[in-house]
Image (tube, rainbow, N blue to C red; front, top):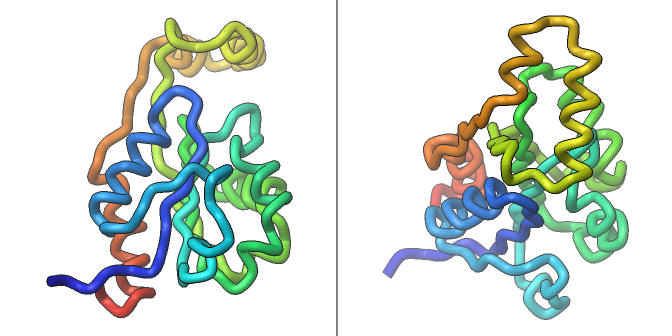
Length: 174
C-alpha cells in the first residue's frame, strides 16, 4: 500500500471548471475532497496541507469570503491554491488578485497556480453575461472582443501537473 498525504482538497465552483480540476487533483493526490463549508476542525487538525480551488469573477475569488472567515483555522497549514480564470497570463494582475483576495497572514504559507478555465457564454447567469458584455464594450481590440464572445474551454487534466508535483515534493515525494 502507498503512503497517503495528510491533506484535503476544498473548492468553490460556479460553472464546473474548478470542480473538474478539484476532482482530478483529489484523484491524483489521493486525498479527500470536502466542501469548505463542511470542513470541520477534527479533519483540519490532521491536515498538513490544504489544496484550495476557486474561480475568479470580476477580479474576486469565489472562495474569498470563506478564506477571510477561516484564516485562523488555516494557520499553520501549507496552502496550495489553484485559481481558475480565463485571462490569467499577466503576472502583475495575478499578484494583485492574490493580494486582494487572500488574507495577508496566509501569503507566507501559500503557493498559487493560475489554471485556464472555460467560458460557455450560453451557460452564463444573467449578471455574469451582462458583466462580460460590459467588459467587452471597453475592449478596443476587435479580435479580443470577438474572442470573448465565443465559447472557450481550456480545462485539461494536464494543467494540474505542476501543482501536483509541488504538493508531492512538499509531502516528501509521495
